[in-house]
Length: 193
View (cartoon, helix red, strand yellow):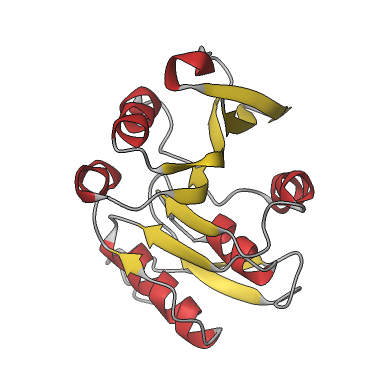
């Protein structure tokens, strides 16, 4: 018997489930890519419990969108709009396919977060930040958000970072409303002071 020794390229799609709202229980694909780690369902449930009185009609920015789990959940629960920013071409393409499947016309920009922030000029009600870990993105990103005034007066930022890091949120004019930790990830809901 002859064996095929050629390596097979693995291009599997993974599935995420929307937890609540109009698309509740809907399963969507996302690609396998290095560093792409959708926010787990349990953490999303906690986050959207925190956001339940803020999410209706909110204009949101999903920076480092990846699978789009946070932005899609926001849309399902009544957000007016979500702008998805994702630099990985295949992830952005899959996200566009998911938005088309859900028949929603929210925008995706296939650009890196820092480049988008340099040209951004419209403030948001809620910003989701789930950057790649251990690359020290958060301080630069929060500096840009502050400088460009991208958060509305009563705006909120949800962010995740590795548990070994700590930040003084007041540097960026933010205060902690809620926080939690799951495994190696700290999650915060921050409000503009």
